[in-house]
Length: 122
Image 1 (cartoon, rainbow, N blue to C red):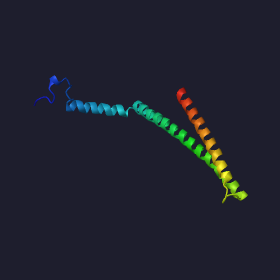
Image 2: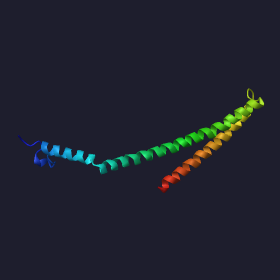
Image 3: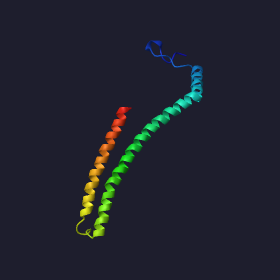
Image 4: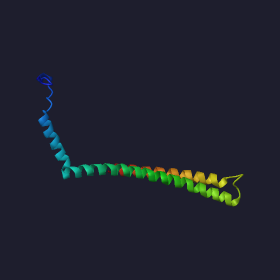
């Protein structure tokens, strides 16, 4: 039987079945090693923690934006309703939405600047 790859190709020959089996068993033994398992688990956990932290930061920023915008609008609606202005002139809803938009944008800009500062410090 001839060699699967001739020596002049410059590539190594594949391992024999016995060598392949020995390498496979060594790989399994290495994976079963407690040190390797704990290192792999720690790396996965660290990577997941970083992704989750970023996700939670931006989610928190979105929830803050929602409440900062929504509460003044809701307050304006309640005030318009209480004063009887609602069907004709929603003045406090408009004022609440303008105040809410300004406060929400200020909060987002401040939050993103803080996050960028923390990232730069790492």
